[in-house]
Amino acid sequence: MTVSAGEKKMMHCFAFTVIETATDAEWKAFGTATDALPGKIPSITKVWHGKLRSTLNLFTPDAESRKKLMAGDPKATGDITRLQRKHGVCMEMDGPDSLKAYADHPFHKEWMAAYEKVRVAGTTTIDILGQ
Image 1 (cartoon, rainbow, N blue to C red):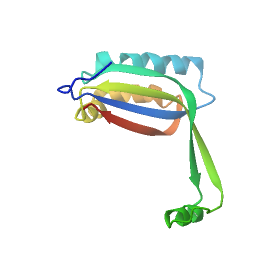
Image 2 (cartoon, rainbow, N blue to C red):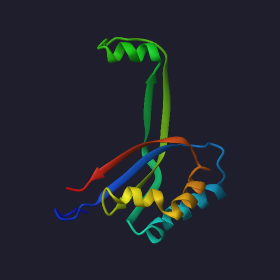
Image 3 (cartoon, rainbow, N blue to C red):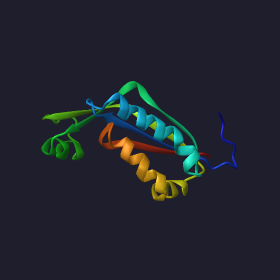
Image 4 (tube, rainbow, N blue to C red):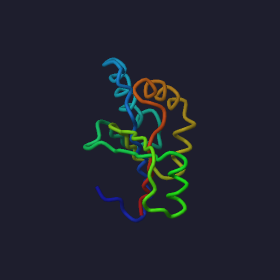
């Protein structure tokens, strides 16, 4: 799908780490709530959710190694923590102002209650603005 020049849509996408002990019922509730977003929040026009095609790995160095890397040391060594994001959600929205409307909407709280049962707190989020 192509967004025309006058159409200032936005894709709000985020990847998350799953709670491995989440039940089938919790996943079903999350899916149902996510599918309902476009009908409940007017600024959301479409939604996609599911497993990522490939795992998104995030690597975080310990504080001392990070300090060295930020100072320009390309060979800093130390402890690294890996965080894996395996699922994601993308929401097509009317535009950048829609993000606040989405966050403030009463259904967002209901959706978050279902979402928080299947994901570890924290996401990797990107917003893509239509040209």
